[in-house]
Image (cartoon, rainbow, N blue to C red; front, side, top):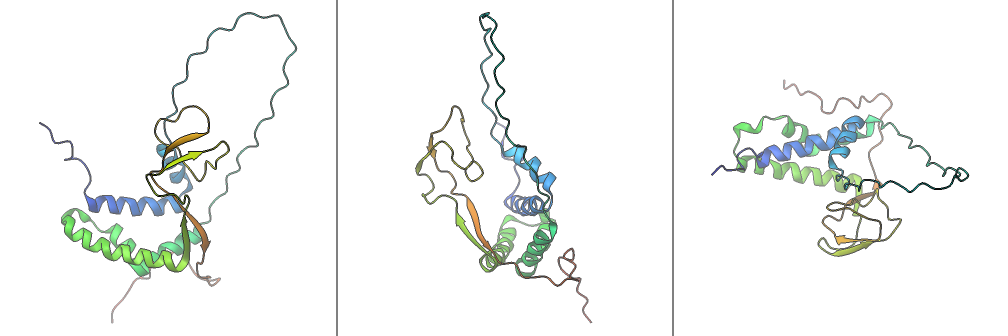
Length: 200
């Protein structure tokens, strides 16, 4: 019998992939758009339209007003680069994600991940206020009424019909309620995430 788990990535590979995906999403809008398309649930198949009976000619209906086009904002990279620099300084995050982990055992990677986790948590505590999007405990049954904020709540699973939707809260989500990144000097080069070190 074939073991289906042999091709699955190890814990260390998944950690490195999660961190690199997170920061590429912050700095690369095109990558973020592709990732968003992958994460969207597949649309439910619609029934084939039936032929309408022939009716007497009527006046052409007034076209419904179209929604305003979505205006895309280009994200400035400086804030993302500054955050990445802070995570490198406190958690050695870039060092961790740039390391080839194939030669290390999962236990060694887990020990290194603990240091990265502690440093990342410190940066988030000092520079952000982060709160759950939903107050209910995960696993709770929730009802989403018509007009719910689709940017704050993503529907997954068998999504059919119209609101209200009733389901189980699988993740409470996160929302940044304040950001406290340090101010940068005018001449500061945000692209230098960590200076090279030369020991004399």
